[in-house]
Length: 576
Image (cartoon, rainbow, N blue to C red; front, side):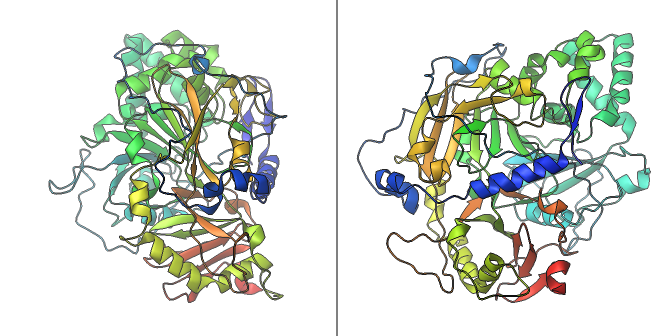
């Protein structure tokens, strides 16, 4: 059950409604593309990247300016220099709240190493390159199902260019032995740090009081207030933007980016799927997913958002959220307005409307009714309405049966895509191409910005897309970016062609003008709706190299190996 604090006096319970919206929007997001749009922008539909020297209909890319020492605060910086767009009646973007994710130990299939995890200042060997990013993940032992945890750590281990800092603390009082128990034994790029509750409080108060200028009495009071509010901070959201500063003593030197992440995700190939060529020019890089909505709700998802590692970035959030600006605001009633998902509500509103921070939203999450997960990438099955109908089966849903029959073809397509000599390598070096379309947008901030939000509606920020109608599938078949390139600068939306990974399906007719299902690579899969499905189950062990986890959100999960042999199916499926 997901509880959303909408006002100080009213609490809305919306677990079932939120999941229903997820299913509905996932269905609507896969509608067939508009044939008129295909004629206007055929390269967006085909996924090809025509080599053309013709001028591109894009705005010039402005050279970025460094963030000043003292960030200005603006009530509405995002509308400066932008042009309002008139569109037909808006519709809400496909969004979902983040349910709690708690975890239990697992035994990694990766051989144990002699890495010393007891040193708080863990350092990689001198010959190891500095990680490109640190994921700071908070975890507390709790008696809940966490069968997704092995694949989180296995997928993290398959990304050696990133570093995972797992902060463990005994939030629910189960005992220190649970906190100390290894969660990712043998995964070399996961550093586990167990902090007792006293240190947990002190690290947070040390940073906040340094910003407020606390004396001893103020520090003691602020700490008491923080301890008292712990039960309300259900998913560790209250202080998320400050994690790199709060846990700075455990951060590796030289790492320029950090991110928060949920543990119920399967990470894809981060070297391929993250926009590294753009990231250094932004302060915040937030995840989105492909959608066909013309009105897009903007927020920092709790399942993944990345930041430039800098005290100035953390300070900009602290100074833009009224409940944290001063000591008096923190200990007073102002803070009581903080909601359950404040990183997606209050902090997101602050980013877009009350700071001049540079941000980039990109399509990162795999969001489809059918998805493919491996240790070398995660993929959505797009346009599944075009799948041919498999012979009637008493065991499987029609699309599920069709995709299972295509196991060898899917394996072949994945092998070709992930090959070091594959075509995607050159394209990944340039996120923005001459085929991109870009236009200014105006952000709206009010309760009517979107008809459904899971946080206090006054924090909703949305915009009406001037370009979605120009892209097949009303934007679904492109790669959508939203950005503020310069401090206090205008906000723009941009579409790039999506790279389509085609595979042969038994019974599928292929030819000019015929629709066919295809694979789209993402940065991660979030097992959000799946955890609440009646069939929910995952193998006790993590995926191994070459194995594929195929999930039909409504009906079940399957694992096959590199030779396309089925090695596991969810119990509901296996029992039929």
